[in-house]
Image 1 (cartoon, rainbow over the protein chains, first blue to last red):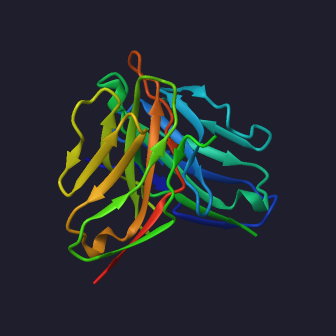
Image 2: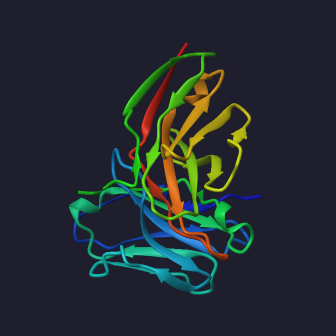
Length: 117
Length: 118
């Protein structure tokens, strides 16, 4: 079974430029998450989707960040314009809801390492 | 207050020895889940082991076991017979809630960097 796919793996951009990250979750996983991981820290949630609905975006900086999951499968996270402080790893994860809820396990993709110059 | 505390920024262990990575957590929710993930230098977070708050026995998965002490709110990861490939960052995480079906966010600690010495 294929894991969570993310692209690109690495991205270097100038500040004020836009950037987009793509994620394809594990087949059949209805819940998709975007996490931000700063250097030396654990991941922090940006947004959670249940199917195509964003059910928790309280930690997404909406002035410059946006996300979509139009058909409830793959998702795109966008930053416009990027700032120096956005340099980090952006992790996508998916899980399957509705089975054993307490054991909903996040399966992570390899992440996209963003460097803003 | 931090919900997940990992007090060991770095740990060294001799190959083939056992090592314990510490994790304490803070929650008032009676239903929660605790997870350990491994993050090698490649960056991917790899799920290792899960412990539910109502589970009576400590979780085990191969060389990984979780020393769950509910009253002390600790969930330490024990890796037996360390291998060179175990060198990585290890993150403890908690998911609160769980009444009914649904997925909730994970709250992560800052991680422990484990280095296995040949």
